[in-house]
Length: 376
Image 1 (cartoon, rainbow, N blue to C red):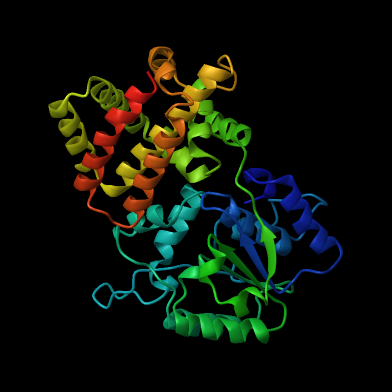
Image 2 (image 1 turned 135 degrees about the vertical axis):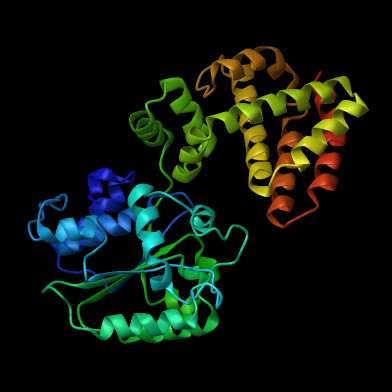
């Protein structure tokens, strides 16, 4: 994996290259950024650059034996640690026990989150961790002599999921690292990591991708129309994983649109039977689809305001959505937009905390009847 293949900030890549050029590569670095930013692919691309036999000033060569081994995830000096669902029944206690699944998802998808990873493992809804057995495996691997004459590299994906025992052992490793060893911690949430671990790493902030980058990637990889690529990128809000999921789940996107239209029309008509039917339809979906539906609603509210006040500039809509908003957007205005956004954000917040979805969406649709009419 090369830098040129990663949807990332040029500024971050230049910072990493500068480390190598000045021979000041920190032994412990944390690539920190929002979920869906290209942190993991960036860590792999940086590893390939560090191990490359013929690197240029801007990228690894992509052709030497070391590059080929990193690309195929078979380089003996490149190690991965990632959260797993520990199970005596399935004989899973550390990353190595599901290495084949890891190599498959990282090779084929490149961009994924913990939910995608759990789906890959058939462990959806469970709590993956980096446990104490993992820390033993790390120490064992790093005690071995390097295969080449460059570095031993350990990429730790989601270190915030280390349990207390693993975190304490990791702290000792960072304090006294083995010679020519580099730790790359790929992190979504630094607040969940021991402050002492953070203090021993060099923080590299990786921003979310901008909409143009995502739209260009989506259009090229999936061959969709420009309008769909732009709509998906806007809805993803910089989250590459969500953009991919949206374009791959085009039917789901259309289903959210149809359900949203049904919801808004029922709210405007204040028809109790229709409102209850819609709330029950949303409540019957799984939690991830419910959260995606709520985010879709927030996206439509934003586009409604743009249509109302910016003369269609910067709209990111599909044709069916634009046709609907030409009639509906007038009901979303300064009289109700703040409250609508607040209610949908609250719904998302409670879904994240496993609220009863039937009660939650029943309450939401009742509030919508007042808020939509308020914009008339």
